[in-house]
Image 1 (cartoon, one colour):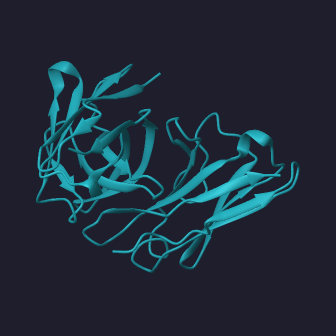
Image 2 (image 1 turned 90 degrees about the horizontal axis):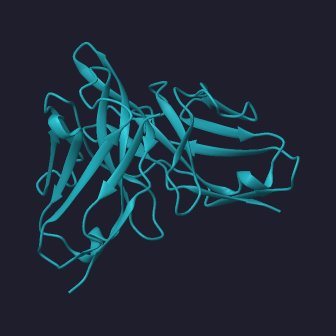
Length: 111
Length: 127
């Protein structure tokens, strides 16, 4: 089964807002509210940023927000900071026997 | 604060078996709230879920790897392990372990989110 679809890269200037999309199907993103987002700085442990579409774990900045419309989930980062430059991955529960799927990842560059 | 740490060989020969251990610190692997999982990332590629285990030993595997994967748990050591046999170059990847938040609805396990993750360990398959 194909991974969830994310743009390969996005960029923005400090202070701006960016949105990363994650497109799946009605068997995963569209059918369930179990979408999560991870921030990954190379060489470090991935970090959970959003779970269940729009919930932020304790300690995650409120500059990070999540939403979903149909088969597409989105991660929005407002007030971009240099430290936000990282790879971002979405994930979703799937009703297929794969149980969980990841997106291909999006590289965020802060200009 | 819960921390996970992967350990194991960084180099495996083709056709051999990879064995990795994930040590859980700062919390019990016997929690009835969480599963524990393995995820990998080949160089330049995205994340791939390998499989997950509950402290009772119940396992779920990615169908694409199921024939080659075994995940087990050692409650006495607060560890869980990954074995992947018949390794090929395609299995070269950074391997991560993570705690898995899950929900059970009408007997179906919903794999929800992974947090925290270990730092990951690079495994290279080469002769």
